[in-house]
Length: 416
Image (cartoon, rainbow, N blue to C red):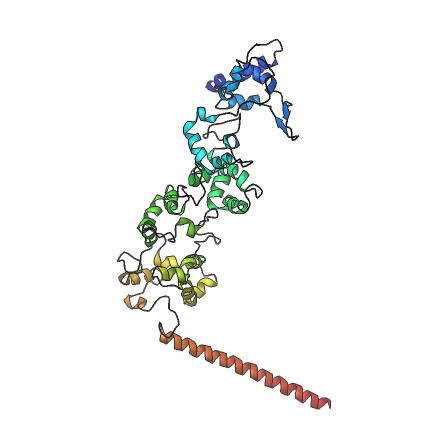
């Protein structure tokens, strides 16, 4: 009943008055008078460059919008001064600030607002996201700003290479991510979408320190949904380094990605069991970066040389990887008694996969570099096998050469 009184009755009344040719007025004091012209689908204006701009206002959209009770004059303020129709072709631009002052202040400081001030063609305005006349509340599932519709709305521009060269495929990847599938396919209204990470009216580029996706803010931004993980991260060596001003310290997006985030059990995920060594190695294999902070480098190379690394390389998903020993988010240095790789904790850590592992099990060096200085035993054994196996291969090839040369020599003699 409330819907009928609020929506359908005004619609029926407006339709009746617009269709009544006998109705007239000497002043633009009613939406009805505006809609007598603007309710015609063929009403349009031709610009000097030949572009045709529709001036049609869909009655159904208008009456069902949140602005229906404001009236045309509420937004087009200069209509109040007009007493005759048709009025002049150009009206002053609608000023949303009159009612939405806080949102307008945020918008004008945003990257979108700055593009408008710079005169960038096609830069999004209020109407781009909220529409002009069919404005619905964000809580309405039909609204373009409803949670599960926001990604499609943003992608209208951000997946267009002509509008934003170079970023289309990167942003479009959100559709296939764990967040995108849950939002766009499953209709999950609790999963992260564009405005949760980037904000709504005050969107800033990622390199702006005020942006929620600026590197130092990412843990807090992701932590809005993943609070427990954020708390673990902040206590970790990575979180402590970030707070101390080390900008190179990894944050959520460095390990999980940005728009391409996948669940760990998905093979393509950057944190899947087979991909974690390479993900961690992107920093820990960087010799210059590790030397800068006094951390041992070549962690990925030495892992690859180990039994675990070889098994991982060939697709064994149950073999130990970086996270198996060091943990995921609560990573601590080996000198910290709470660390999973603190000497007194190694037997328990290894025991996760090797139940009978005792104190002696983990006494050997980890991440062994087969050099004369770091591991002479491994160096000599490996060097011996390189020489031994290499020598065998040379002898084997030499044997084949001698055998075949003799074979051809004997055949020539028979032919003579």
